[in-house]
Amino acid sequence: MKDTLALAHGGSLGIDGIGERLAFVGFPSKRAAKQISGSAEDALKSIATLLEQMIVGAVEKRTAAEFKVAYEGIFQSYRQLMNALGSLIRAVVPAAVIERVTAESLCEMEADFRDHALVAFGANMRDQALFTVWTLRKISDLAQRIGSKDVSQDLKEQDSKIAAMFVYHGVRTRFHLDCLFLSMRTNRPIYPEVLEVISDGLRSAVDAYAWIRQAADLRSTHEEPILEFIDMDEDDKIFVDSSAFDMAKECQVDAG
View (cartoon, rainbow, N blue to C red):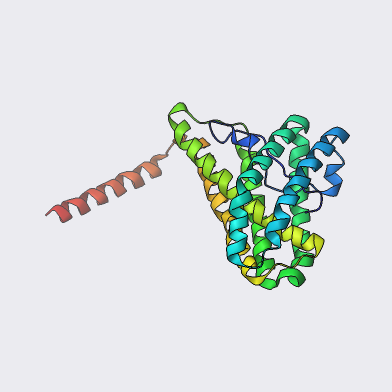
């Protein structure tokens, strides 16, 4: 997982402020990490180390059943740490730096999978991982567009439910990506049954995108377009009158 630091993009997607909980759109690149102050970087790395320690046990499981038990046992703690990491990042890292780090991180993730995933997991998993990173990039773009936009009071409850589903699928996606990164970085092989479960977990990226898409739609304004008045010359008026007359004749024929 390299310098496994997750980022939370600022913004409010729900009543509770999903921006503080969105901590799974990318890993900071080595270049961007240098833009974070020393004390903040130490705190982020400490949380990242705890996240990695959680994942090691799951990656080493031999069967799908064992992996699922491990996942269920640590997912809540993993999610809480991700939430804490997201809140910490928002508190100590400027918004402009967060955006830049996220963008560079996604590029780095894509390069890692392109260079190493084929040997580690095979072509199918490599392609799925690359698609997952592409989906995370789409999610990140939507998060930036949403920014601090809020919804009207009558949509708060619906927005909160959307936010909860988005967070769940986003964290689930990130967990399974972390498993792949840890495997590649430490040369820990993943058993075939476990790899199938991880593949299923990566599909949550599509669900996460669908939920944030709904959140974005709630914030879009649907206004009737204002049409400018167009002056018509005499020929235009004759054409319009003629068309209207023809339509009226057709209606009379149909009625008859």
